[in-house]
Length: 93
Picture (cartoon, rainbow, N blue to C red):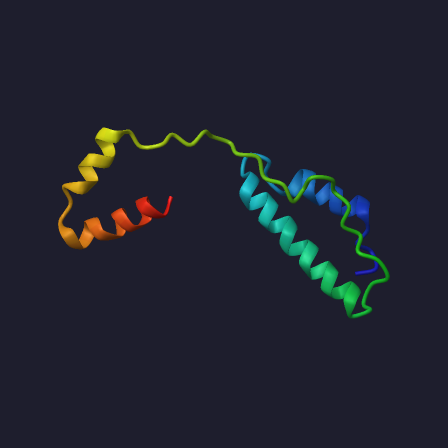
């Protein structure tokens, strides 16, 4: 743990973690942050060396396209047991 400094973490973040998988990258960094926070709380390290700016933020890589009214109407044609969860979720927003 004593060899794990901010420079090493930045290098790991920029080279080992794949930039084309932003959610996976963010989750891996969040796990490291949590582990290092616990190590700091337990007195195993003096200071948490995690210092990569904006590493915990995920930017949406694609736009979400809402269902059209025609697509939603097709869901109403489902059998009742399959339709009910769809109606409940749709009503919840």
